[in-house]
Length: 204
Image 1 (cartoon, rainbow, N blue to C red):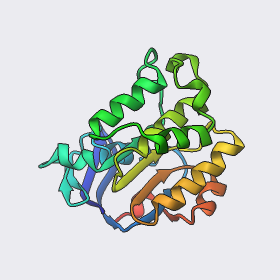
Image 2: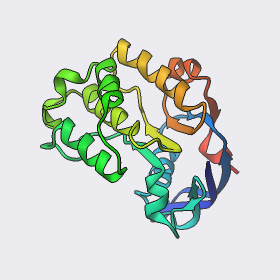
Image 3: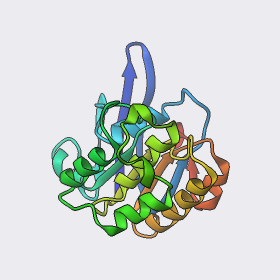
Image 4: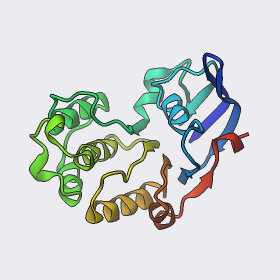
């Protein structure tokens, strides 16, 4: 479902990673190592937001280099920084995500938003939301369109206890038939969803 093939990335003289190659089967996988090891860069490459210097990423059989629209259609991404569009409302982001995934905001979408405690905040602008509330919007958006691969950077950061429980349940459910790859120092989340743990440099 997710394959990285000979990925390399550097910024100037700083080599972030080189020659990464790994196939991720369905299930939860976590990058749990310390900061400054390339976790966020790798997730950005997989999400199609950061261009690698070499190599390719395959999402559900589609190459990011050769079939970007088809690959991204099978991918959901929860960024570390959820404040890219401060004046957009949560509802507007969900509507845009649904449009991009060629799907609709249905009862299941709003049920997830409710379970995460997001309901009262959907019509607020992102600049009016807490860090955790912003992340809840992106987590809800990640459920749209039945993606084959879900990539999340710090998915539990800022979440309250109720939302953390829902997140663990969500990852467990998604991991039954898709790849959930996330970066986190949250050992409770890693344990709750039974994630396999990896180090970036070990993906060879």
